[in-house]
Amino acid sequence: MNFSKINSPRIPVAPNSIQKGIPLKCLLGPEAVDCLAHNILLVHQQFDEESFRQVALDDLEPLGILGRGQHLARVLRQYLPEKYATAIEIILASLTPPLTRTDDLGLAVFFYLPHVCFVAEYGLESRENGGQDPFEISMRAQYELTKRFSAEFSIRPFLIQQQDRTLSRLLEWTSDPNPHIRRLCSEGTRARLPWATRIPAFIANPDPVFPILEALKDDKDLYVRRSVANHLGDIAKDHPEIVFGICERWLSGASNEVKWLIRHALRHPAKKMNKAALQLRAAAKNKNNKHEPELLLPLVFADKV
Picture (cartoon, rainbow, N blue to C red):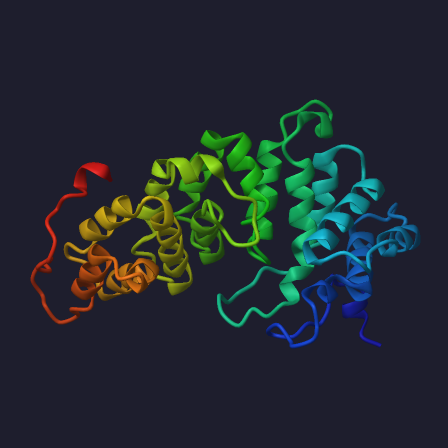
């Protein structure tokens, strides 16, 4: 018997990609509940493991993946200490080691969806934390969770309810050495992030997120730069001229990596044959010209950036 595994946190085995005929919700099934109970019990001996398992599995079957994450977070709340900060410290102590790669992560990381749902649901209100502001412990929790899964879903209620202080912290994190943290700064602020709650304020006015994208556009990891490109592409759905202006400015002296980012960001308006997008993408394809790119459209967007 391998006693190191018995005394170590674990996550369920999962495929590397979505399998035909197997819904995502299966990632949070009985094995995930067992792992969750096991991991919590390792660090919190008062945890009622058997009762937790029973309640966690009740009514789980009909729920989708997000519903299961939220359900398991609510059950965790029942079986962990009443004060949110104490409960979060237990959850953080139960985590497996952080990821060391940014590719081929597989689907096993969805095990941590209940954990981020816990932060999203209970991590904003002082009444959940004995009257004390839980912001700092919640941000630390998301900092750790995003190194194992992603806090792009849980960070959104913070951006909606406490925009300034959350953006300030994310801007600090753009220089973090961990690429998972840096990616969160872009991915978590995407107003139209698929599967996630939208951020209406950023859809109406994306200006607050531009310092983050500016800080990350030259990131050394494609994993991060791709998020910046997708983020710009989302903004272009509502504010195309602003995005065209940003891309035009970034083209000045751009590296090949930034040129790729621009082409990726503008692929959807280019498919719709938008003239400005087509011209910018054409200019961004020139990898050999050492001089400033000769743009085919005038600098008409600079005052809107």
